[in-house]
Image 1 (cartoon, one colour):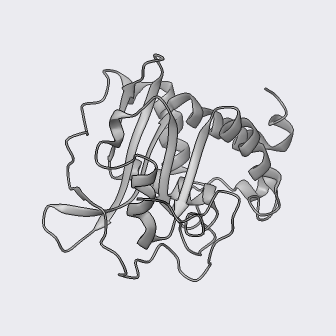
Image 2 (cartoon, one colour):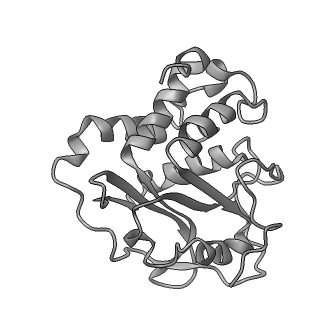
Length: 222
């Protein structure tokens, strides 16, 4: 199966602002996942008490940069200016210091194209086995200020953490990898509809946090 490049939006492209979240138009079969998938292995001993996890959970969940997701939201606009992913400042820094330097790839698409995107990127049901790369494939959030590729990524990451739909593994390079999946309810008993899957190094998540919270001046370091 090939990917239609017109359907697959890269992180540089824009998005619709019609809805507050993704909308499945029903034109294709949804990608399903079990309510409790087998890959949700026990977390490494001591991980939930680690300083890395504290920072990740605090920032992406409690202080979620996504609009309307937390009363304790970190205002990235106060640090990076209005529309930080549209005016190019924060977007450019994250592209240079994360997507390029750390080889993290973000692939976003419309709901009807998700299955095709997942297949094309090798992110089907056994996506959690391929952890020597950093990749996230997800449905782009539509509207409500969270419709850029990065904000959509943060939105799905926030949901995965909030719902406990993640695990941590060590890849062949000895690096800890955060494996996650975001889903939404479905009428089919025992299954849920997939909206995002990703594998990303713990160190990369920490790097994203540092870049955002340090602001433009601090991002010049490293």
